[in-house]
Structures are given as C-alpha cells and as structure tokens.
Image (cartoon, rainbow, N blue to C red; front, side, top):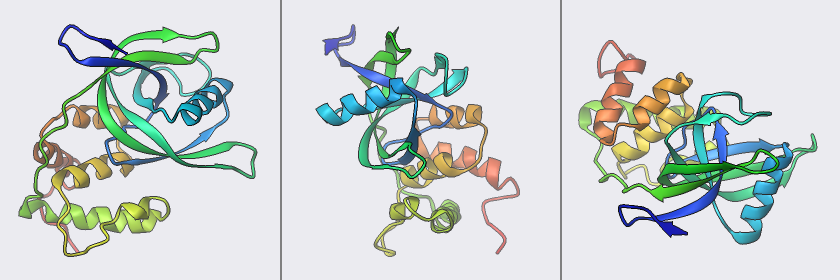
Length: 209
C-alpha cells in the first residue's frame, strides 16, 4: 500500500478488464480459462484479496492487454466451482468503487494497478414517480434466476433504495458499454436513474401493463 497526493491510501490489485460495469453489491458470474486470470484467482483466494473489475475502453476481453477506464469496482470471490466444461466458474460480488492509478503489465499480461477508494455516494430513497423501476428490476431478476434472484429484497415491505435499483438495472440491462460507463459516472443515484429511465422508458415514467 501507499498514499497518494491527497492522502488517500492506494493499494496495488490485479485488474480484470471486462465489457461490463459492476457496482457495489452487484453479482458477477465469471468463467476463467486464461492462465493470467487463473493466477489472479489463485492469489486472491490464497490471500482473501479482491481484484478490480474495470470496463474496457478499447481492446478485447481475452488475449491482449486492453485499454481500461479510469474507474472500476473491487470484487471478491464469494463462490467457485470446477465446471463440467473444465473451466473455473466464479461468483463475485462488487465492493468499493475505486479510481485506477498507475498500471503495470506483468510477465503473463496480467494487469496490476494502484487503486484509490472513491467516497461512496450518499444513499437515496427511490422517488415515487420511479417506483416502476423497482418493479421492473424484480421482474427481471426473477426471469434471469440464479444467482441474480438473490438480489430481490427478502422483505416486500422494505422499499429498495434508488442506488440498488439503478445499479442493478445498469448491470443487467443490455445497454451499450459506453452508455453504462456514462451512467456510472453520475454520482447522484436519482439523477442516474432518471437518465436510465429516459433510455428504457422514453414515453414517460409510467409503464404500460
């Protein structure tokens, strides 16, 4: 670990560039087959350490070294299995958002970066005019099934936060990666959800049943 110019603690972690955006609390199933990422997983499991999931700006997920975004999300492995196809299956959970600093390409093309934690945004309640988005999210999570259905609130009487609703929708909806990244850069979760609602429900805030 080291301290950057602002006094924040920076940590060196392995980087997994992907065509996804992961938020805190989100779930990310992965299939691992490249040697560099098998090494990364081994290190993370041995030391109970996270890696950082970062959206790809240019390049491919496998093979080469991709150009990555300026921010990502720490991810921890919460379950794993050896799949029938011989690949290693992981289930990861998103942790803290981080800013990506200096990167280094290691001998097997694994990226490692200095990351600095970003301050979590203030939690916000879900506005009543966007309540349909929570219903849409639960509907999608049920349709997708395991493991994402575990993200459905166990208590139907509990109102989900705007953060939870918008972040989960951004993760699972088939939006262009550039649009997901643009949405993730909006700190205010209600403003983020309002922009997202304009993309998925441009006619207005009420869905047709």
